[in-house]
Image 1 (cartoon, rainbow, N blue to C red):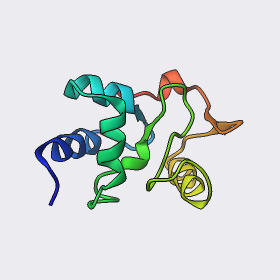
Image 2 (cartoon, rainbow, N blue to C red):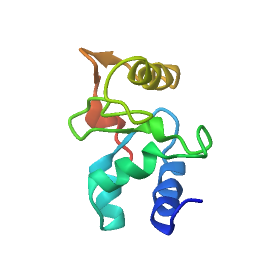
Image 3 (tube, rainbow, N blue to C red):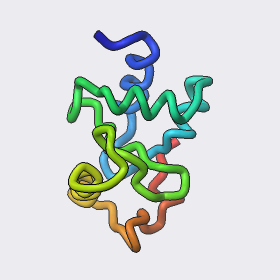
Length: 103
């Protein structure tokens, strides 16, 4: 059963439109929390893909983590999901990152 904090993270995450991303830091600021706490909540996301946690990335435009991992097939899956929504990558960083951020 998700905690109230986790539910708040999931609520915000649901608002990120397809083709856009947000960052752990931006969600943390909105929730007056830390990026690490947001990441931990998303790591346990029981509502994927309804809660599109793949749309939350690192503040530098790189993928960050996915499904509790920071490398490997999980991160490739996150990249594939974002590509299927129209995002493009250059050296594993989202191309035109600043234009793709949902705030």
